[in-house]
Length: 474
Ligand code: ADP
Ligand code: GLC
Image 1: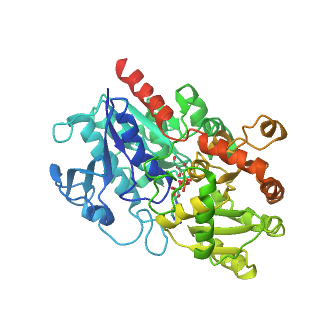
Image 2: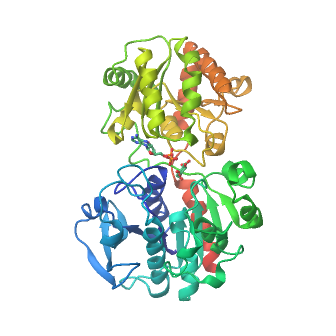
Image 3: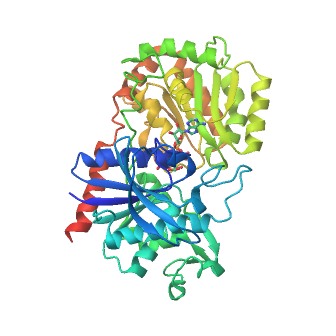
């Protein structure tokens, strides 16, 4: 049994922009089944502070990177939290990483360095009498933690999980002093990256063990295409890098108990949800599959590829219902596509309940990502009998079994994969999807296979537990 401090910038159900929050919200509960105890250090954003209920002040910092701060302990939604209440850093309107206009907050370096600094103080002196055996940071926002741990003389191991290597948390070297970083360690062995400070690199070089969120992404990260500048560091650290696929929170994503849908135990129960979903999106009946997509709208997610390939779906009577927000250019292009075709409907925004209704009511769920460290929506799709159509990359490669003649013959197929990740290959995948849908016997077999596939946290939590055990037994 280990006591682990999670250091993370978002955590469901308190604050979420993507899958990182889902993982941070679900993994502690799954680890508890193995006897491990997690406390989660989270920034006290304005939206978080309003949801905490009863808190206890366990630490005070008179000057934390430009202002006073307090560390609050509380329990919310089954999670043990340590919330960093630092109003000068986190008490503001807008997003958690960006302002209302979508620009990164200029003081993001200080905002997340402060989180890492406080994590290091907890590693050294504990918080409210609780001391971690392991510090486990997630993504660049937690990357500077081992630097501060080193500076403050912490001796516990640091584990670092890469959820998405695209974000480096780079900042100019002239911030070294302001961030209380050791100039002697501003070298390529530690956190210097092409003349800048890289929070991500600090995490990669300072971790005892590096994990990422699928086996295929762990391999992809070693290549220049997917490593995004960090592939060299990762090749150097290859023997300490391991891929552990994400699970889903089956308390929240379960078609038999989901309060946002008409619950069902077998795929036959999807019909009522499909009808309801078509109504919500203003779509009529159609003979092809209703495809759904729920996503951040960014370059990563391949939305432009989808727009190019859409005619192959629509020509065969397929439909698209899409929910997302992000890049304004993609939002405009999606609105145009919806205006141009009665079988395309788009909602721009963020809506948890609607995302459940879409996963329940869709026939297929689309994830045409250029890269995808793990991806969670294809896992929701599997659980709900909503067959995933995905790019063959990262966690999408590891969690979906492509409908090939062989996998169909042996009755194990669960979805459709396409490669290379191009408009043309996606168009061909739509043709295959529509052919499979037209063969309802095969489709139903695939739905049964999909719904049987284990997509919870059990196995992966065991893998994290084993890593913690190996580091603390040493
Ligand atoms: P990423 O973390 O790269 O965004 P994931 O697939 O791992 O991708 O996780 C995305 C999470 O965010 C899922 O839980 C998904 O349902 C949710 N999500 C994304 N966009 C929206 C949206 N517009 N409305 C509701 N939920 C969304
Ligand atoms: C990232 C990745 C996504 C992954 C999520 C949780 O945001 O883009 O693939 O599922 O983190 O690990």
